[in-house]
Image 1 (cartoon, rainbow, N blue to C red):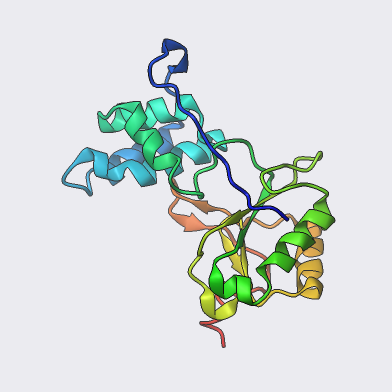
Image 2: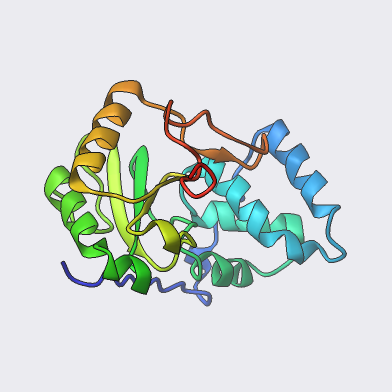
Length: 206
């Protein structure tokens, strides 16, 4: 596997880069206003509002950025600066279940490359690609903060830890069969029910 390096160029000079702000649901708009009130400066709410926008558009589009910028009264390019820095904001479409494989040192030492190779062979896609049925995608990311349970990955917003090929086979098969909700909703401020029987954290349940 090669390193998954993605470069995003944002043309801030061309008027063609502009778009109408996306129209979010009344519930999302209300939640955004509640979050903004929690900060002394509106622009400090840029990260949670990016999550709200992504929840609506599925990935960060120019229209999503324009909406965030309008809510926070800041230039769209500054919103893009945040969105392109963090891997949890998707800059292009991802699968219904998006896998982020941690490749930082502790995971690398304990088999992160094998985890990436597993998903590559299982789904027939490279990092950053989506399966033809739109169900799966994966990428390699930096530290996800679960070094003690390496190797691990995050599927949507849920951790799966101490991974082996056999364990991954079971996880993938169950997800494909049960279609669990593995997403955190910023609008509802709650995490989906997850995969039944799988702990939210293997450290907390050890």
